[in-house]
Length: 341
Ligand SMILES: *[C@@H]1O[C@H](CO)[C@@H](O)[C@H](O)[C@H]1NC(C)=O
Ligand SMILES: *[C@@H]1O[C@H](CO)[C@@H](O)[C@H](O)[C@H]1NC(C)=O
Ligand SMILES: *[C@@H]1O[C@H](CO)[C@@H](O)[C@H](O)[C@H]1NC(C)=O
Ligand SMILES: *[C@@H]1O[C@H](CO)[C@@H](O)[C@H](O)[C@H]1NC(C)=O
Image (cartoon, rainbow, N blue to C red; front, side, top):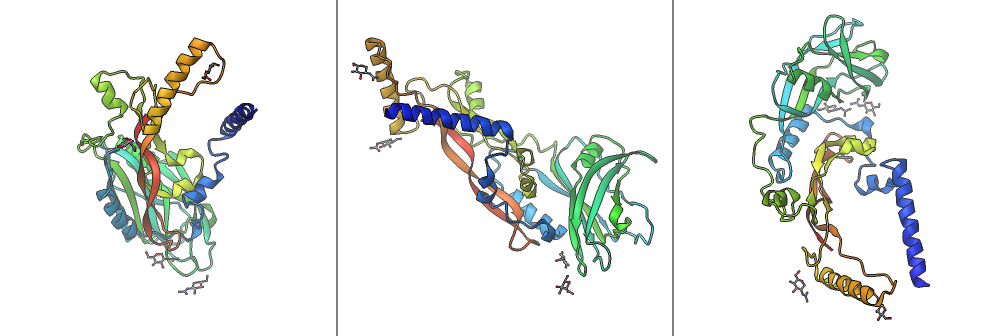
């Protein structure tokens, strides 16, 4: 009686999980955003200056735990005192001296300090194009900027694709900003591109020094069985998880979270004393089941699961003070070690 109920419930739970995950990666996870504190930021109020961004980000990168991934470096390409545009209705053109290189671009953001919009609309729509030739351009991104009626305001837009192509050797002819609902009247006083870059000369830095003893890559090097329980790499890109709010995370944009998978043969890497008992019960049950041919359920084997988890430092806009950045510690965001549990 009790068994049947349990089995039915297990089957039902399984059905629900399969059903919801097949709808969308983000469905059924409504609480995730509030649990991570990502649901309270008012995008219209964000006003992060270039100075605030570069100073907080430099400190963040300098102190970042780099045992799982390479830490990028911050590069800033500034254009100060841009000429006043006047009443022209031409799109704003800007040329940043981003050179070709073999560096790997993680992300790049255009940051503009825009003047108050006394009578003009305060919510403007900007399309950024990469200039490819006299008549050719490539669409990069469209973004909404929330401006102020009486104060200057910092606005930002992702220009990773353009910076990426310049570093790969596409001739750098600059960017063009097209603002339909403000007649291209932007007049930024400061304009800069900030980029997070993995320098090709520094890329070979020794990472993985503190890799857990169950790391699959270490095991593979030693030539032991690949299929036993170990820690595999799992590279997560926040923006691909299906939540728009995850785009508000400034750093890291992606991280290596890890997962546990593999077989748990008898006595192999048992996590706790309980796991050892369960392992013994499994063997005992199996023997009994073989001897007496009874169909009762056998205690399952231990399974490969996280045995040690680690935190992740997240750089994000402070929802209480939208002109400041803060570092948060998100708990248990990555697997450090796996064991049979
Ligand atoms: C700017 O305008 C807002 C209303 O939009 C007003 O509350 C605020 O006091 C003004 N600030 C200054 C410095 O004039
Ligand atoms: C945005 O920040 C700048 C300083 O970087 C400040 O001068 C400006 O008044 C702020 N604008 C708003 C709308 O708070
Ligand atoms: C349980 O296991 C740990 C090792 O994982 C050991 O240190 C501990 O003494 C064991 N026994 C008890 C009674 O907790
Ligand atoms: C199988 O049946 C035997 C005899 O009835 C019993 O002693 C044993 O506990 C059973 N095994 C399991 C795994 O239930």
